[in-house]
Length: 281
Image (cartoon, rainbow, N blue to C red):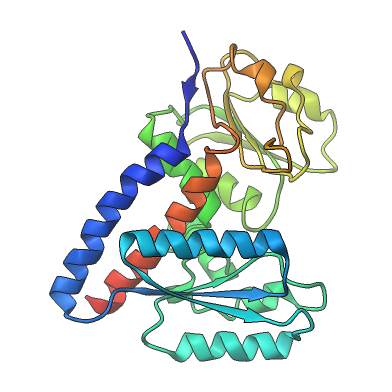
């Protein structure tokens, strides 16, 4: 049986029509402007600027308002915190996105945690992570929640499955582990100090590549019939997993590009809409 293509682009496009209807319904009830996402970009990294532009365009497609704030490369932590505080106190702003990564002189964790949980639509705060991990209401980290939505849409079985995640970042690997655990998967979280990494990966019913190194995970490390989720994207259109040799022997996979990336952006705008619905209800 051919592998199922976990097409994030198609699901995101289909979801946008539903989100647009929710925006229209919310405006009809509230009589005011639509929910508003504020994005903060520090510096002039071209890739980060592209990501912010894609998120702004996604907001426009479903009728959300968005404002992009670009700060100089030399911005300090106190200066960035001042900007976040201004947005946090503005009732017209429903979601705040601080584009990752920020320049090295900035304490990124401190700035993430300055975002109020009610406006943490990218799911980056310690408070949001803790609430999510404990099964309490919170906005999930956008990429892991997008992956979970993709898996649920395609009815991929999770309960009782052995999920192996390669990568332990605060906004991808760690929240991904908690979300899969909440779905009753048995989770192994691997990282740079994991011994016998290929053997750990060969045990995976569900494999998530989230380490940020192009094609680091080799095809012969992956068992037949696995579900392969590649959260990486690198120049040349490759991810963290050596995907082409796997397509004919796994049960499902995310293409690169077109798999995880569109669901990340779609989840961000969905959570911005949710924040607006809560604020304007």
